[in-house]
Length: 230
Image 1 (cartoon, one colour):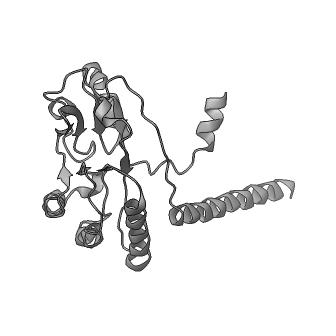
Image 2: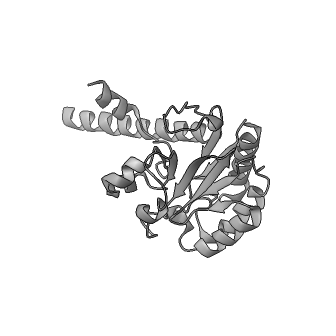
């Protein structure tokens, strides 16, 4: 009897944890947070001091059309309300290929800031990368497919480089960083953060800051914090 009682306690505790995680994930989904990070680097030209870059990833428009679209519109309104000079999009715009048009119906409301919008593919853009590219072009977004773009202000430059998805694309950091010198300031975009570990040292040195999506910010982070404290 004691053994059964002990087992039931464990089961109820486990179920309780699941319910707590589900409730928290629902809360987190509805309450979008903006994190502000100040970037300091000797490679940043003076002309870019004070410039603001907004990075967003993993919209993942899915099958729950009514609720998901409401949240997506909320996210786009939040994007438009932020002070920014450039927008970077980190992939996974729609969960399924059939929902790609639905995402871009709303994405047309994203206001393009002075220095433009730059985007990469995520794993959910495959298949459907061709349709994604066509929609990006129509909206005036710069899609980076193993390539980079030079951003210039008064003859001073920074670079935005981006690769395709690690799982379904053929990411090529060497090609994406082509023409860039070690002293140039580079923001490197990869949907999957694991790709950074596959880059050679020379490529890592060229990328001043790597921005990635895919992990959705990390749904469970308390274990990571506990390990860091130890």
